[in-house]
Length: 213
Image (tube, rainbow, N blue to C red; front, side, top):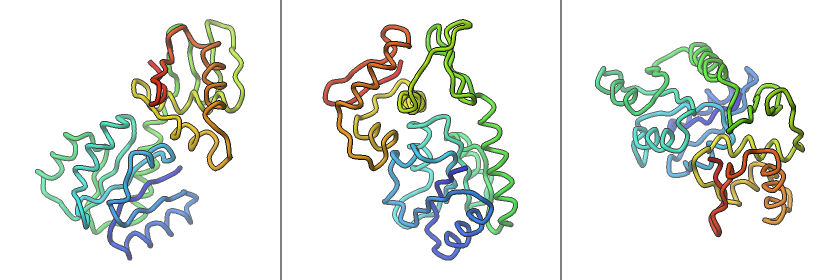
């Protein structure tokens, strides 16, 4: 599990990061909420979000997260404990709400429950093609379609942002990380995907990127 922790309390943030990492969880901790960017959602499975931040409102970040990635589970971790505060967050799409003070073990249990709940839906349909995210296989009817490793990673990324244009730069960062490759490589793997997906599934937006319909 990969957690994006947005918490401006230095002591609490550090202790939570250490506790979760000891439990085998990878944590990206942001103490300055101005550093948040939707790009960070590409590399996490769940977000833990404080509401009372130094430079902005957690509610505003929650709204951005759910607009960018409606499927991203978000756990609110805050000292705000009124019913009204909870109502606002749940109406914005929050998936869980834990008030301070709390036991770190409870946070861990809630995170595991959240990711398990979201993980149950692991198949996607693209026209007549079924994508099995657990087995990392794709099918048309009973026939399995073959994809390279990078082709699969690109498909997985496009599925995460289905219906939205993603830039070539974001694709490069996600699929190839820090490897020195250029836009022509992305075009080659887009071509590979187009060979196996229904016609018109992937649209090119010149100068902007690609979108999986």
